[in-house]
Length: 248
Image 1 (spheres, rainbow, N blue to C red):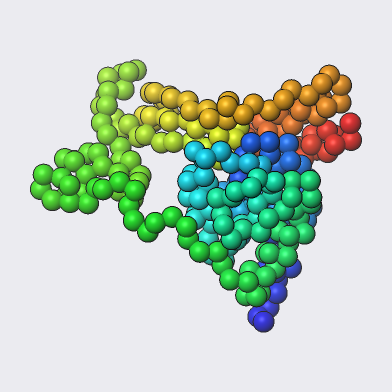
Image 2 (image 1 turned 180 degrees about the vertical axis):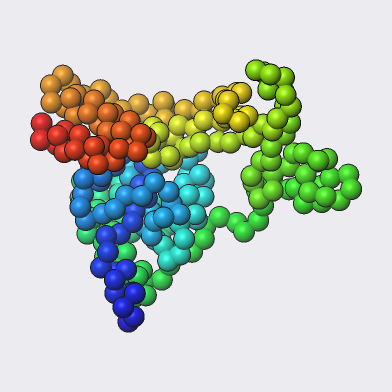
């Protein structure tokens, strides 16, 4: 085994948490677990950790996120759900500690003892766009089309000065770590201006119970503060807040 493989196997595993129903509090606690290193993007992970239960309408988006993790990769499902969107994932009960399974999985991937998880999604464009234009080009006319599922910008008037500028549609969610699980935002951006916004919140169908007054509710509030600090890039301060919440 090469020195590079040994060093990679000994490092803390980079983990992307994919949070479902009932998993937000557990996902927060992972931030203060020194055995793991949470990352902000699946492109920086080797292990995808599914925390909580995924409703049926989030299974396909979850699989798309899993396919974005670069090989070698694999999945751990930290849930008691009877079904999982990743059939070959390593299961961990909701009441158990997932870190040992994640560390062992990462070590096996880095040493080559465990094969990388296969791609689940189809290797084809989600939207037909090649050759659909009037002259055989991709998209429709000079604008439009969704090459490889990514919408292209279109021209529109900018309300402040009347200039015609590019408008770019983008969807945020439903698994951004700093947003509530299941929340999706459909935005249309024009420079630094949000021209339109649509909110999709499937998570409202499964609301989490509000803790009773006292330490449980204080821990919930501190967890929300920690989420805000992560958005602001103050990860170290967010960890301090979460450790304070654990001590209550």
